[in-house]
Length: 266
Image 1: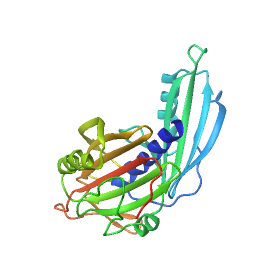
Image 2: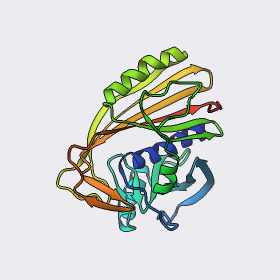
Image 3: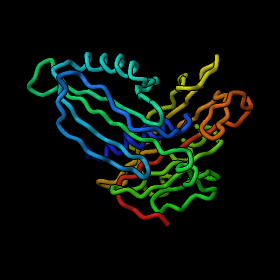
């Protein structure tokens, strides 16, 4: 279960970046650590081309002090933080989560997940105008398949459409029933302004997001995360941001699925 949650988080981090930020190559980089941090474990998790390192540490700093440390030191090290708490730099993402340390009052354990985001060529090479058929769930009509990965625990995929996020949610709530899925939980539509590193505009972009979690039998689940980004007045030429893209360009709605149980792709 822990491995599955980490895989879901890692793919979710890739989804956040892919949905609205340019993808760039980068050299290996390091993450600052509190002076008393002790590494408990380290694990490499690969989800398709996303390569992630998961490190767990202990510290006698409190959770609040660890969070304050990273807000300050990550900025000093050249990282930018968005409103979701995700740090980004040169094609890498970093997520830091904390929890109390058992039997140690005032101390904490924290997890650092560093992921290398695939470059634009790797992502575009996986795109398909006609998505692969999935045996365990429906495909959104008329969408483009950004990627589809078989993983050790199931299947992960990303799709793109110009339809409104509300239409996408309605489709999955009804179409998943035909595959015997039950809606287990839902995060309703949330709208927020976002500012991406390297994006220069007087008007911030708007991100609209929602998610659905379905269960079908013991050990089988499917999480569908949907996001729509508008107001990005840029064009991407290679790896260079160029301002002045058409203001009336269609809104891109991106759909991420994370299916937990091994199934094949037809």
